[in-house]
Length: 226
Image 1 (tube, helix red, strand yellow):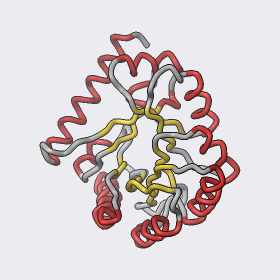
Image 2: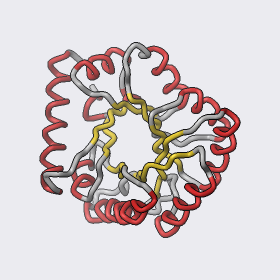
Image 3: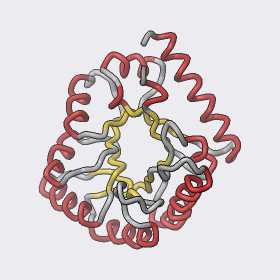
């Protein structure tokens, strides 16, 4: 993909985000996180050059490799994949800006133990399985606020910054909207616990997510797929 094509895609995305943001409120701010698992180093550099600063990977090994090969750029790296407990130490070494996929109390406890051993902290989002889909990770919505408070209380090395969800994987827009509204309601509850980030929306549903209150979207295929 050449620079002109990338510029056109990026501009189009920013325009669509702006339109959705203003529908919500002219004061609403949305951060775009570019999911770079779909692309190569050259395209990441190109998009960085066009002004994008936050990028995400869904595999710990890929995250480590990208951080190393692109260490000349001050990229804000996010981790968005399911984390296996045997990869916790690797993630701590990679030290992403934000770990968006903290999907259970058990994982939080395991991470807390390793973080304490390393004398490290990590900023995370609690992942919520708002559509209650068996194929997805995340805490159940009715338990989310309680689990959020518990992690804040019992895991001092985890800095919870908010919540994340993946919209319902269906064609029915009303069902997708419901999954976002469910998560946003939880986000409102945990704002008293210091939550600032509500990460919802991907390439196929980010406009709807923003309308439902998302202030962080994760977009990959719209930017990078050939």
